[in-house]
Amino acid sequence: MNQQIKFTKASKKDKFLYTCLGHALCAVQILEDAVSHAIVLKKTEPEQKIEAEILIEKQRKYTLGQVIKIAKEESLLPENLEIQLSEILSERNWLVHHCITEDKENYKSDAFYNSISKKTKTIATKAHILQISIELDLIDYAEKKGINMTNVKSKMNEHYDIDFEKN
Image (cartoon, rainbow, N blue to C red; front, top):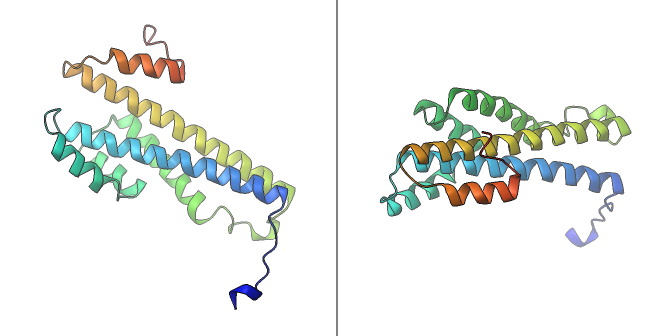
């Protein structure tokens, strides 16, 4: 039966759509992982490596909504980050559950592709900014515990062009 099904080849517009969706989903998934790592790093001490490894494996099974809930309930992130994470969760849910089906009448129109492109770019950008904000929060947290973060800051500066002297 499956050999008889002939699928339509993806058009250029379809491939563009898939790229936009993939970019945003990847950014959100990386953000989800950053929140999970923040939870683990703030719930364990440096000498608790085994406990941390067990906890990160558990955390990685959770959805973005679940890790945000844990971070909020245990006050593991600054309130402003919690608010921004809740906002992007709503956008992530739209991306995963509704972005294609909510406007079926205009699906495949130029307006549809343009709208999805803008929305997914916004989601990806917000996710990247939140990820970096979480990383900066973790640096601050580690430094308050007396951990030297010079090498981490140097790597972040190389990757993100962040001038820590001005921050």
